Image 1 (cartoon, rainbow, N blue to C red):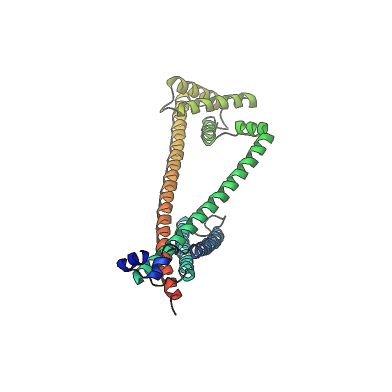
Image 2 (cartoon, rainbow, N blue to C red):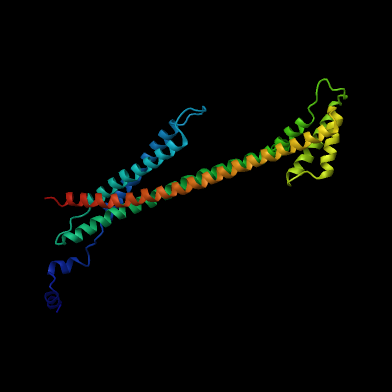
Length: 303
């Protein structure tokens, strides 16, 4: 009965027996190609990291620019993908079993699939390895940071409380400029403790006013009186100095905010470009692995 079905279907008896047991995928060849691709990719990434670090100089005006380093990183990433994927695809195609009694177009498709599978397995293995390594580094750093924080929490809190931020430093500098006095001024020089208290008070007033668009009239008048008393300036000149100092403080803070916004925009743009080029390099690697697998398969089928 089985022979009658086989004869009617037009399939040879040998193929009818081998079809249920034969596999179209040589997983040994795929895993071998993936291992070779992953290892070569790791080696090339380490080499690229070393070459990139060697081109960076700690001195201003020395070494490669940021744009050149970025372009070099993109080119090296593309080269790494092409080289590693090509080797992995070639190994997968060259080491697979010989498919007898299979049409030429089916052999071509299977070789292409072997190259793509080798690239996919290598990419997943590399991603898993990098994720585990980065995770372990971050975990170790977090544990070390927690230990250090527990050991010196009091000292760190004191340092954080005593260290002013950039905005406080700007306000302190502006407050210093308010009380610059002419050496020939007849105004009495205040004691060090009194001068420090006045300076701290003026700094707090400036910081409070910087949160809004202008100093409150009462604060502006009070600061003008303090400046006139400590420096010997006329009241009109003291009021003008207060207005100029507050304008300078607002300009400095606006410049800092603009620089921070530009830095954030540049970082976001760089991240988007890096992700785009990484996608392109991975896509090129998949294509090159499939292409090299067909070449390796043809070499495998040579008599």
